[in-house]
Amino acid sequence: MDSLKDVVRADLERRGWEVKDGILYGGDFLLYKGSTEGHTHAEFIVKLYEKLPTYQEILGSVRVATQVKKVYFT
Image 1 (cartoon, rainbow, N blue to C red):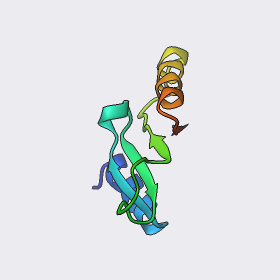
Image 2: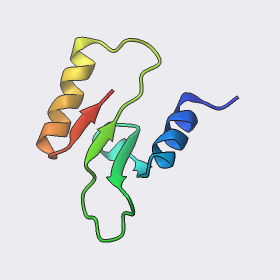
Image 3: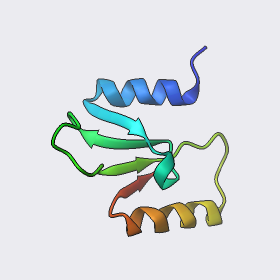
């Protein structure tokens, strides 16, 4: 059985996103529209949760995303 990360990654790639590891920014994935060639910055940080995140978890992640000029998705 595929993990949640594998299923989400495959779906994002099927939709045309270039998916990279997001650990540097506290997420699971960084998303680039199309190829990463020529791109220096991801547009989005994606964080997956197995259970409902706390307010503090969301707030911390949104603050990081704001500082690095990315949109945060949970």
